[in-house]
Amino acid sequence: MDYENICVVGDFNAIIDTKLDYKSSKESKKVRRTLPVTFFKMTEEICTQDTWREIKPEKNQYTLYSSRHQSWSRINMIWMSLELSTNVEEIEIEMNMWLIIIQ
Image (cartoon, rainbow, N blue to C red; front, side):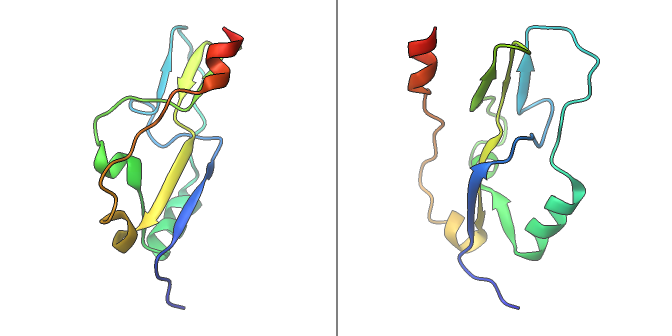
């Protein structure tokens, strides 16, 4: 089956890279939840890529703060086919307004 112009957006409730997509003020030996190998096989099959990481390969920016774990994670992602992602001129993670209200 051929796939064209695919865009998968959502809260994946896991990270890709523990060094780039996770930050904590606590020392913890707990293994961070990363996306499963089957997910990456699927992204290869449908030819999608993590658009944020392609455009900002070294940037540390996060989409979720956990007060319980005192940690930041990038769990919200946009996976696009190459044809779509080449049209992306700019991509940003904006501040969550609820975070401002809660604090």
